[in-house]
Length: 307
Image 1 (cartoon, helix red, strand yellow):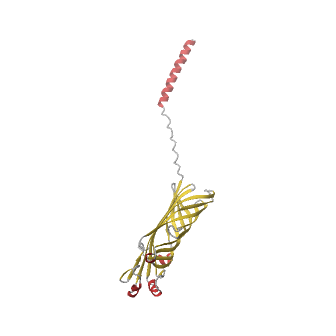
Image 2 (tube, helix red, strand yellow):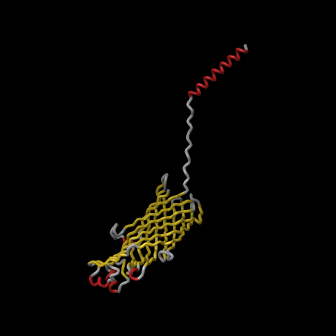
Image 3 (cartoon, rainbow, N blue to C red):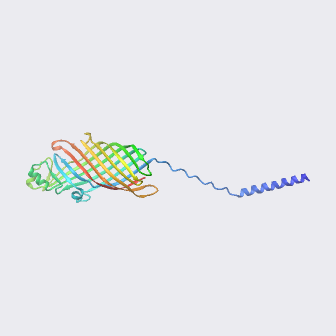
């Protein structure tokens, strides 16, 4: 009897095991959810800022030994020029930052002019100067390109609240210029004008500088203060030239940045401020002298993308 009971139990266990194996074979394996790969870490933060600069001109320009005083406000004297032939600008700033290190770049192309009392000749005799100044039209076309490396020497506060930081930077500023002075002259005045400086045709005398280019080394400091996330003030200043390019150049900039739109990939911000840039450059002597001793200053506005 016991032997038959053991045989029955063994038979039942065999049937149960086969049934379980068959059922397990019919059940599809549970899918394994893929674990997404972590996003690659990018320590760089990049700002690209197309902007506009509306500079007034205060100083003097010398072309082939002939010097002209220029005192032209953008909104009073310059804005009435012909667009884009005599009034045009293209500007873009760039910054790439990795923690305390940063690369700074800036590009400016300008065509500006001054006339109708905003420019006057100062190197002729009093009678000729009066006649020339009444009909003088001075123009300057220029490219100003900056490239610098920056290092953050101090930082306090928190990125999610109020934060202040100070950078020092050094690099170079490339200048390229063409200057021109046009005069409407009478026959009597044409006889008094220096022939080395002007090309006279009919009732028009034109003095052109040709291409002039130089590079100024520069060093500067910048303070950045974040009031709250999305609202930031930047104040910077630099000095350069040191006789290597120009005798002296300096710049002062104050900007306010405010966030206007945020996406998954970047932050758009508005930008308003003021920029002043001075340079004292000269080359040659006598009838070959070219000089540009000028302060350019005016409001700045733009739109910045940070990613």
